[in-house]
Image (cartoon, rainbow, N blue to C red; front, side, top):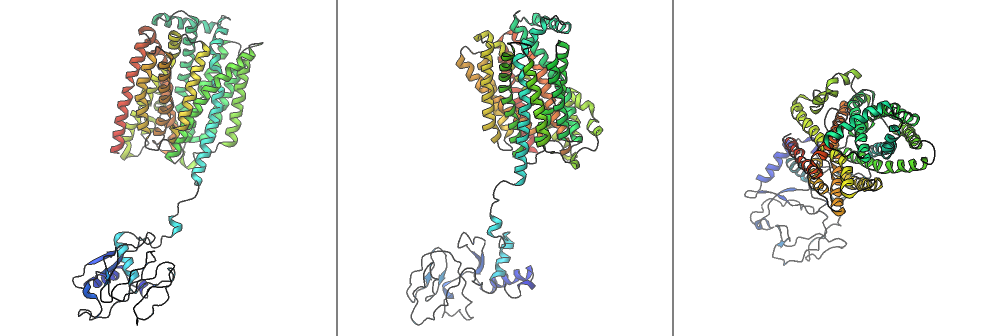
Length: 612
């Protein structure tokens, strides 16, 4: 360290630098460029050299300053110059007087010097080389003026961290646990799907009173919209009625479950919902009447809030990239569950058909999946909502009960918008409303066309139940591949752009399906359909997970899930009516162009995000 450096203030260093510049009249203050990549932070402040500064000139009245030290940049040795001519440094813009000795190159002992000149001292290494007096002050002042105080930054501080951080490892562990738990749950939930037509036929033969009442309502609807009186169509309509009922129950249960988890925590409420599903499957296994079977579906619909809780757990993660990956993995779990579960249920039904009740083994396997899921969550799932971030009381979460159950209030996210920070309340509430409307409109159109797809392939291509199963297997595998390979790699901030692209592709997808005259055209439409289905919902869930306070993520994701359930309850009814009243071509064409409405709304959300 230079003597006296620790006692001088910044202003004194600056005055010394200004005095150094004034000591050489006409010589501007300049910064010598760095001499190596390793020493890029060294900017010297020195007077500019001129030819009159050579030794022996008339202006050289004062003693020459000490020679500047050279940084250890590798370069070829300087060529010997004539004795009377100054030596020019290549690329430096400087000149040195004759007789000046260039430093030796790397690996050399020395260079030739004129006869009679004193021998230069042995060269010191870069670690032991000393700066000239005043050089450190100049470096400190210049670097402080340029904002580059990097002298203390060693190679350790510039080295990137090795391996994933602990936060990334914890996020990966949570995402993996949620994926496995949700996949186990969906495998048990979808076992009943291929058996539903056979179950309805089974209860119709028993002349069950409740079943016959519902059947008369389905017959009246079919007569109004013009559905042909065929057994297959009757099964599809009756199954759609039970599916709509299940979605209505999720519409009420999802926001309440999410709000409860904001106070009690995600883990205990998740365990409670899985217990409810276990009870639902157990009731299905022992049911011998349509009333008990329907009651089991009611219990299952109320307990199906574990899906919204899974999205709330992912929303608790701090990293946007982790949230995006987690929402994509939830989509992968849905794709695999709705692909493998029905296949397993059909296989179990065929084995059980040889004797006894045909759906018993499927119900018992569903119970086994639920118990396994309960144990897995109990031992593996950590709590992602710490106590200090929870709402103070359960009534605080339920204080806006109307905002959690009213469809109009759900579209406005009233239950959470009043808790936002006042400066951003207006803009974030508007984004909530638009995102909720986009989510609802997309699932309303998508679920309706998905429901009528079974009618279309049966009418146009005479698909049997097995061929329809293969078609949905193709859709599920394609969605799983897209979500696992593409959706989970979307960078944070690009979700809305990807959603707009996917919704735009939905227009030609449903046009190709509605007007399909060959299997090739149908397959092309189904491929675009699978891409849109694999991207839109996970990306919209990722965007919504970034809104709302930390202690109300459960309510936010529950409301979003509730809007989706409402869309799935209403979409199939309206689409089926349009399909049978106006035809497949009109139904799919009209719905395809209605996809442009959420596309326009997404543009408004993007503009608001830029303004924020």
